[in-house]
Length: 154
Image 1 (cartoon, one colour):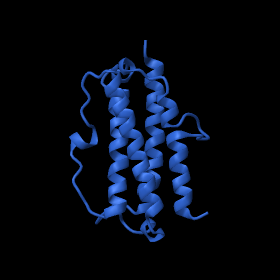
Image 2: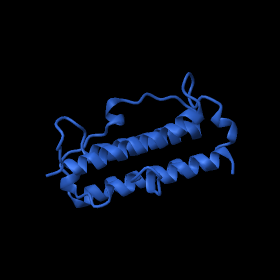
Image 3: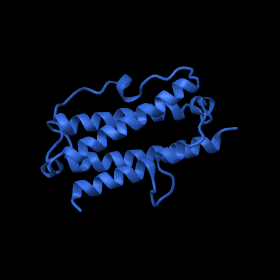
């Protein structure tokens, strides 16, 4: 198995499971309703819906960096896309956006040549290796946050 194949596998495990540590992103999101997704049980912490959109955004950013190698500014609005009141349809669209961004990233990883691991993905940026492993770490970090937010719900 190549390093790119190993990274691809770890991305799938962190996102959909099985992850050895506990729940992957989709497992953590299982059973979350629109009301739960927008609840703020821990003060000023981000909501589950905000985290979901943030994770989707960063998957797309890294996929784009890997595929295009172009630098672009990530605004606060892009980093943490706005979430207002949502209904079931909106929540399903957020989850679909998350899954689509994950598939986009997996396709970019599968298509990327191995030398991209050793090169910065954007000028003066981190190498592909650091950014791709960073996506795995990012998924698991936010999966943990989602689990804690679910536990804090009334």
